Image (tube, rainbow, N blue to C red; front, side, top):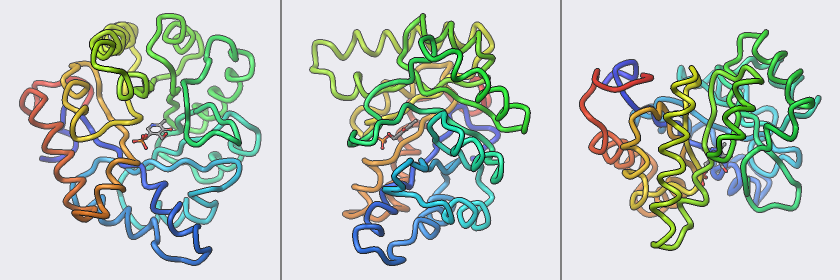
Length: 254
Ligand code: PXP
């Protein structure tokens, strides 16, 4: 299905290909090769997080990824002066502002868009003025969606970690929170995305939320790729998302 007809896009986060490469300090496995396979497998975008400590994607990977595929690049980045300069130099299609702590294993929670308003406002404005689609990686809460509105962010990505890791009895509550906030964001002209901790087993309950326009999925897909290959893993995730959603053309936000 052509990407522009898809009700729900899949962005594949290729960071962990670079994590494996970096474990030995050489060039293999190359995340650019992963980006090419992901594109051929029918993903709609490439997502990569340039961390302060460069633990996975490195600076030179960004332009190499941009040159290797026609897919839009969603650059995940902290709201720091260094990252803003890098984003302005590379002008990715989108920049997703994430919270970042050096010692964390992964992005453990959402950005406090409300509490960090003064720090975020110039970052969002500079990136948006450069034509980069700014997204804020936030918890699904009214306070954070309202802050995103005030900041003028066109996109929010809801952190699905709490949902993905919730015990059975709390899962419905987490799902409702994301469902309600996706509706609130869309009602206020913000395109909602979601990601973190999504797997074959938990993706469909998220994919069914009608306002969501994009899911960004990384760790699970790269892990599955070890067993079944990256192309198969991406294709299977796409199929699960497409099955959960109504047919092409009926969706929102494509
Ligand atoms: N979206 C954002 C903003 C992220 O930072 C990450 C990685 O933490 C993901 C999506 C993908 O999460 P995962 O690797 O758990 O699929």
